[in-house]
Image (cartoon, rainbow, N blue to C red; front, side, top):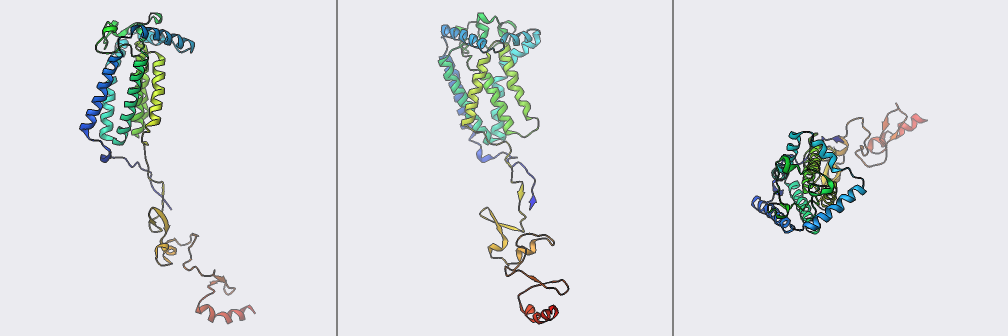
Length: 326
């Protein structure tokens, strides 16, 4: 037996697994537009959104979750820091996810297809929850006592009047797709790459969580719920393994021949009976090393040498051996 080096088998992208580019572009664009228009359809439920916000706030206190104000307090110590957090919230969410999909499509097509399915399922489920459970973010809740950092320090992606905002539904805090998409980007890149530094991608969802909470755009529960939803989506649409490898142990080609993938001795294919024995190095005690399947050899007392029991030579020397024994 020899040991082969374990090497990843998907070094180069599998072009056959790459879907047609135009079809994928239209599909992703269509899903995005459906999500945006769906969020707009959930707009206008102001009273219900604030009632749900009070319930979420009370539930977090019952569960003894950390106060969102503790994170915001750290950001408010530095105006450049809070400005950077607002910029991260406004500018990183969509571009990072789009670049993630483009890179997977080009370099890891097998991973792209399933990652796109996970994102589509997660986004669709989030849209349903937006419609069923409108939720005002903590920056709007008087009981929270938090600052709307986007309006005060900028930049912001929301209008000053949430009830009439035509650009975004500000009452769709539950769940946080900022956190959900960031977590999927990290998981997808960790699975699709083999660099020893790939685990650093987890900084993206961690930083996103701190940003959405510190800017008072989401509650802790918004992130917890989207994490559970992502776990379900990943369980349904399993991602490919990160490093498929060839078997670590491979038979020597001169010892074995494969018939339909099953290793068999070379002589089983009709070869000479001695072909298997001749391939075994001298001095090794490999099973089947004897070329003939006849009776086992007998060992005489003359000179201590081993002599075969069968054959013409053995018959001619039988009297000599008998005399020596007498």
